[in-house]
Image (cartoon, rainbow, N blue to C red; front, side, top):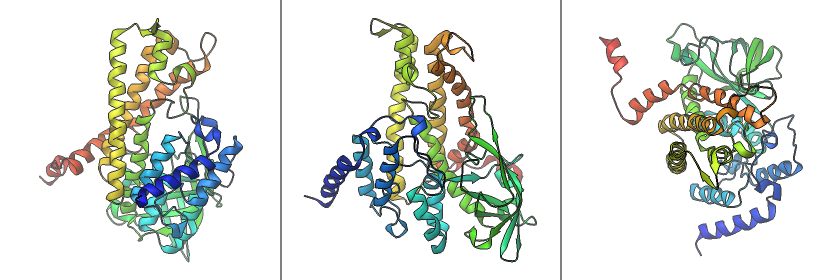
Length: 410
């Protein structure tokens, strides 16, 4: 028996013994585990599952064991993923620390910073948010103006961020700040970490058309941050920012994998999938009566399966290449477009039942689908617009010339 087969057998046995029964069912939105200082566990088995997985480092299986990670090889991590999928195991922890900050901290952080933050990310003890976009600095992120000035052994931060996901619930923030206004905009940015409980930090949730408020405005008024919280080199934050965006775009691309429940947790029961919705609203004796809709759903299911396989291949290739690359933009673009198609199909399948906004005559999940359909339009903006992703694909993947740069030189 090979070492990998032994690992598979032992992993399968451990999961069978340690994964609680309710953790082998489809995730429901209110039971998603975000972790953090004020974590709440609607389902007690969610806490148990997190504790058991974190104790083995399997919330971050390939991260170094030195920092609390699983220390698994790439092949072992693939086997773990396969075995978790085999029993339909829920993610033990959903975390921006895992999907975005942790990988760049491992790459650019000091040993002290890794020892301070990585184990807490693995165990779900700190919930992180991202301080990137600002009013007037969205797609042109490098034009950001939030200022950090070194005063003694602290940076004093002033400015604001917008679209800060879950800032009102986060414990810490990883933030881009301007530390030099006298150099070209990309060259004067730094990457810094600080506690959201710091004096001078305030948040204001932004209510979306979907009715939820996952995003916030975030304000910094003379926030004092220890100089040791600067990650990487002073004024070289743009390098880290770009790397983190690759990880973020890989995460966002997973919206396209949500063939069952809504990526935002909005759809359940009869509108949990386009196929289920079509059969419920348009089915006739076990057959979908509308041939055009039937064809569109079939094509969507084919594209979804192809995207899922491509995403899996990309994950495995990125492990071999030590992290994501420009193909993350390709996946982000297609995944978001696929998710928007899913909602368009849901509305087509639901017919007039998709026209509700409030009041009688509509089920709660029907009303939510309409709002989530509108919300899905922002998929092509968040994490970098589709236009930005196509430019990156053109230059970094296809190797096409930078036409804009050529025109500017002329």
